[in-house]
Image 1: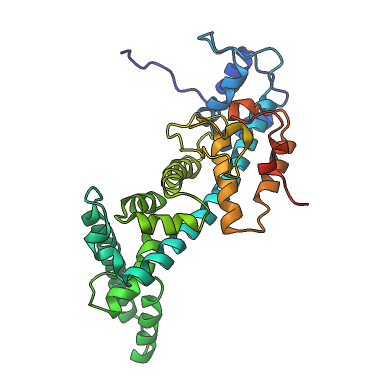
Image 2 (image 1 turned 45 degrees about the vertical axis):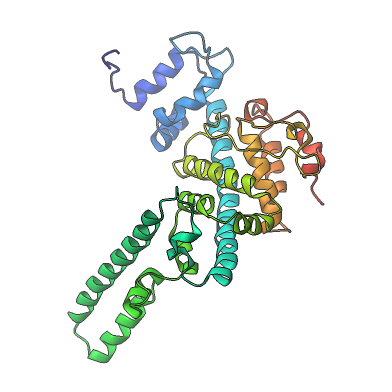
Length: 332
């Protein structure tokens, strides 16, 4: 263990430090504006690919320029947006698939029945999560009602405003309107969960038959869907915090298809796991084709990669000529 002793330096000193390390900066003013908007610390992970890794002084390789850093940063930002767009579509679809199966087969308040979940699943935590959301929503509503009561207007107008406020969210509407059962129905409950909660809920279902029916709607075996939801939760959190994505080695490695009959990139068919983002992009491509058959997501990915030809695709796990694989063939 060492004592931290790095000094705080302003943007002018940051630019000088980059120059001392051999980075070519053509326009100091533009560099200053970028560092004001992004910060030196956030840009640091993007510097490493242009630096001599074996040197503790972090010198840049000959020819590296500030524009190289900003271009890579912009690529990563746009990659995150593309990935988040797909994850949003998939997440909404999975909520719907679970609801459309579990509700008709197990009742409107199915999630309140512990028998439908594995013993290892923290069922009490799920119920407490929904109860907490309802209670918080009701408290907020009651505070708004108090503010409405102080308005200088007639009682009819106040009642109308209260009625409108009660409908602003179902977590608020349900406890204001109903007292039995104590918690909202399953189709509303699912909309209150995070993607991580949703992933745990699917994994925690007790009946394999339920899992299989839900996964089959996405043309997947249940173990793959379970693994992929877990992986996408991690990826979503990376994107939500605007963290580096492009060359990240995944801490959570998704299970990948092993059967040759499964539509999957040939280069990955026999690999049990893959630690780079390419495997996640393949997962999202498969899922997007199920939830949005006329999607242009694959085309947008290809266009992004073509727009940034100097990005190291190997560092992302892309095989050579990846776009020529039948899995990525795009109908023009």
